[in-house]
Amino acid sequence: MNRVKQPLVILLLAVLTEAAFAAEQWPLHTIDNSSRGADGVRLGDADCDGREDIVTGWEEGGRIRICFQPDVDSIKLPWPSIEVGRVKSPEDAVFADVNADGWLDVVSCCEGKQRTVFFHLNPGGTASAVRDPGQWKTHAVKASAGQTNWMFCEPLAPMNSQTAVLMIGSKAPNGRIAMWQNKTNADVLTTVRKCGWIMSLRRFDIDNDGDADIVYSDRKGDHRGAGWLEQRPAADSKKWVDHSIGGLDREVMFLDVQRINEQLIAVCNTKDGGLLKLTPGDDVTKVWQMQEIDRPANVGSGKGVAIGDLNQDGHPDLACTCEHSEGKTGVFWLESPASRDPAAKTKSQQKWTFHDVSGTERGIKFDRIELRDLDQDGDLDLITCEERGNLGVIWYENP
Image (cartoon, rainbow, N blue to C red; front, side, top):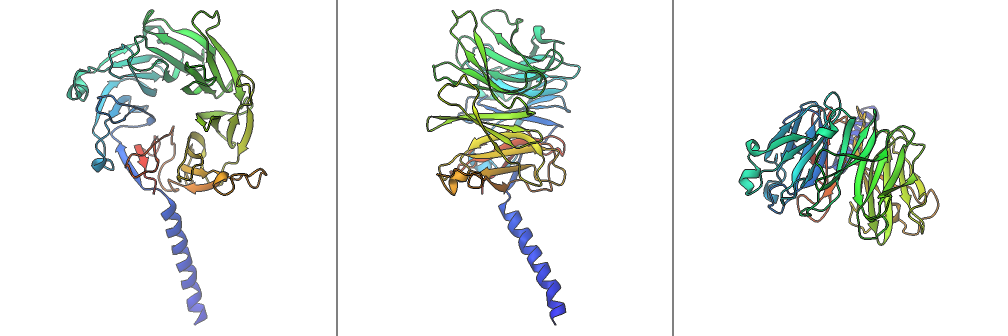
């Protein structure tokens, strides 16, 4: 009798364990999977309906597509989407009002043989015109053509400003962060910093002086690491001043930065190590203090990261994505140790708690993250994309 019961008990325990593991994972919803190689998600209200839309460059498919956010009743269904341009090897697509007409255009950055930055111009006027793919026009930024592998763009000036300013990053050869402005000559790019491989550019007022600085992560080469470009007044002879904040000996990936309760926090994922939590002292221009957060077991190599309170306990958690995730978890979140002990000081007390989001069955190469409450249930959901398993543009519902 015992011999019969023993395998049944083992089987039951295995089933219960699998069910508990699956219960912790977040439901996945497809936004758009109409092309190949979704590479990045960037948000903005393209049709001025009050809802944030998503723009994505599809690297293998050569498409630039916008997904229009529906009302909440349809949020779990595929979103209405259009193609606004075709380019080769797009690495990034971002909303930006490049002609200062009050409507968000799209900027795409291309590597490979294309090596050009493109503007995809929003027709504006009405929402129906914006949603008509035939009315979008694509123009190359001639000064960018053939110069370098363009990887990432961050709009610097706010929408509706009379001056559009873009910071555009690239990787070798001739890796750089370059600035484009529409008030001078649309075909002029000014190099601000030499780089090896730009992964992130984020607009953020680091020194709290009222203007936007640029936080970057540079993955490879002599200039690698995380840092920020301080914007100086126009009269200053040195408009941008480069400040390193850490990770000089790491292969840094995507980066996020927040100001929480007056405390600046930057978190940078790394390819093969842990995550780097960086906080400044009294002088933000000096190298910041670094705490390394261990990478959990059985997850892929590091890629994206976003800071947000995912369990609504008042403490900032970390959402993470991975690549090389075959048979491993590709999306997860780390619960802040302050959730258990706000006064945690020792390394054991400061351990971040792992929570699986994606499971191990679907997805190989995930990308950057946006956190939004898409289903309007009061908690943050996770928006990302996946390009090797062709999941496309997706979101995970916070349970």
